[in-house]
Image (cartoon, rainbow, N blue to C red; front, side, top):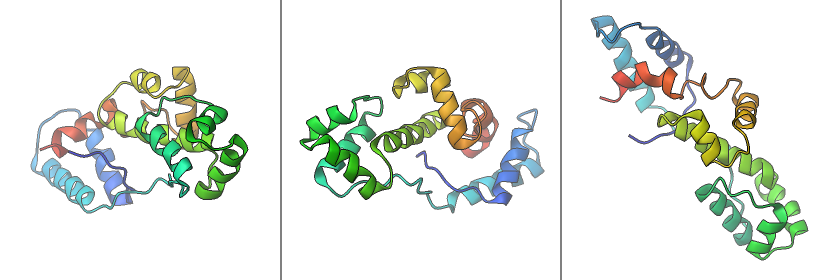
Length: 171
């Protein structure tokens, strides 16, 4: 199974919400139909672009790819500029021109995308926060809530909320 982010249409959202309310694993005919609907709907949804564009400049792209591979890397703008062989002022000016985001914003978004993947895989919120380089779990939770409107534990991809649906979807 491969993790991907999708835009959830209303029908799918309601079906998943209904499945999360089931208090047992009993598979009735009605529940099976809802599970089949969920699987069919998810299968035909295209992956969602969360808006993390890569820059075109090779030096900036090198920084971006390194951050995608190592999201916990907390180098400063000056340190990244030195590493990539670019002036820090040029980095600070060109990165937003090419991506629409400052390097800091881009790094936060990359970390949050990785956090969603990790939560979907069942990793604990604390583990995700520490592994992705957040200085505190509460800081990670606050940023996650500002971005997604809910805490990581309350997000539909988190382990606790996804468990019932996973029973039927991962067949």
